[in-house]
Image (cartoon, rainbow over all chains, first blue to last red; front, side):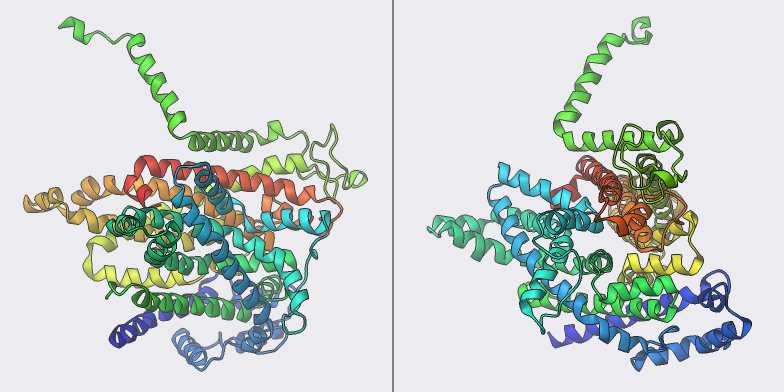
Length: 313
Length: 294
C-alpha cells in the first residue's frame, strides 16, 4: 500500500513538469513580443522594457525556465503587473468563494445524482429511467451560463426568491451565504448531476445482474438493502472516477458561473486578468488549477485501493 | 445469365431501403431529431444572408431595445441591431468552430496516436506530454492562448483544438494497442507486411468508427468552449456576431431585455444538444462496446 502511494506520488512529478513547461512556453511561443502585448498599445518604450525585465524576458530562454521553475517550487507564482501584489496573495484573497461554490456543487450533485441513478437502474426501462436519462442528456448539453441566465430569469427576476448575483461569506452569515449560493450551485450542478446519474445508472445496472445480488435477494434481503448495501457499494469505484474527471469540468464551470453571478472568486480573478492582460495572474492560476487537478486525481487513485481491495497496481 | 446482368428494378430495392429508414427513426428517434436540428442550423449558417431580414451589424440608434415585432422578430439590442439576424449569423461561427476543431484535432490526434502506439520509445514521451496537457483545464488553456495571440477566429479554433488533441491521441493509442494483439495483425507481421501498410490497412479502419463518435463530441464541446471564450471576452472578436458575444454584450441589459441573452443561449443549447444526441446515436451504431458501458 505504502509502496503504491509513493510510486503514484512520484508519477505525478513528470506530469507537473510538463504542465510547468507548457505554461512557461505559452508566454514565449506567442507571436509578437509578450512584453509589448502585456504593456498594451499605448505603452512607452520604457514601460515595455520595465515589463520585459520584470518577467525576466531579457535573459536566455533556458535560464528563464530554470529561474521560473525555482520560483514555482518555492511557491512563488510571480507578481501581478497591475496591482503589484504577489499572485499567491491574490489567490489567497479570492479562494474562499470558489472553494465554497465547488463544495456546495459537489455535495448537492452527489446527493441528487446518486439516488437518481440508482432509481433509474432499479426501474430500468420504465418512464422514471427514461426521464432520468433524458435529463442527463439535456443537463450535459445546456451550457452553464445559459442555464445560469435562465435560472436568474425565473427564480431571481421572476419569482424573486433569490438574489440576482453576489456572494456572502458563510463565516459572516450562514443564511445569507446559502441564499446567495443556491442559484450558482444549481447552475453548476446540472452537468455533474447528469454525469454522475448516468454513470451510477450504468454501473448499478451492471452490478444488479451479478450472482451475489441474486443471492442477496434469494436470502430475503430487503430491496433497499440490496440496492444500497450491495449494489451501490460495488458501484462506488466508477462513481468516484467520474467525480475525479468532473473536477476538470468544475474548474471551467466555476470560471463561467462566477462571471454570471458576479462572485468575487478565482474565476473572476482570471477573467479580470484576461481583460487587463495581466499575464502572471493567468499563468499562476493555470498552474494552480492544474496542480489541484493533479492532486485530486492522485487522491482518487489512492481512494480506489481503499474502496476496492481488488485494485492493486 | 443475361438476366443477372440486367440492372435490378427499382421496385426491388426501394421498399427495403424505405424500411431501413423507417427502422432507423424507430430505433433512434433522438439521433434522427438531432441530425434534423443540425441540418436546420447548417442551412441557417449557409443561407444566413438570405434568411436574415436585416444586416446583423447594422446599427439603428433610433430603434434600441425594441421588443419583438413584425420587422424585428426577436426585437433589437442595445445598439438597435436586429437580434434575429444576429442569431442566424451566429450559427455560422458555432458551426465553423465546431467542424474545424473536430477535423483538426482528429487529424493531429490520429497522426500522433498512430505514431505513439507503434513506436515504443516515442510512446512514453508522448503520453507524458498528453497527461500534462490534460491536467491543464481546457477552457483556461484556450483563454491563455487567445489572450496572448490576439482575438481572431483562427486563434480561437487553434486555441480550442490544443486541449482536445490529447483525448484523440489517447483514443487512437488504445485502438492501436488492442489491434496490435489481434491474430490477423500478428499474421500480417509474420508474413512481413511493412509497418506503414499495417497502420493504414488494419489500424486505421479500426480507429475510424470510434473517431467519428469522438469527433461529434469534440464538435459539441468546441462550440461550447467558443461560446464560453466569447462570453468571457477572450474569444471571437466582438464585431463578429457569435452567440457567446451576443450574450456577453446583452448582459448589462439582462434585467430590461432578457431575450437578448436568452435567445442566443437557446440557439447554442439546442445546437449542442443536437450534436450530443447525434453522437450518442452514432456511438450506439458504430461503437457497441462503448455504448454498453454508458
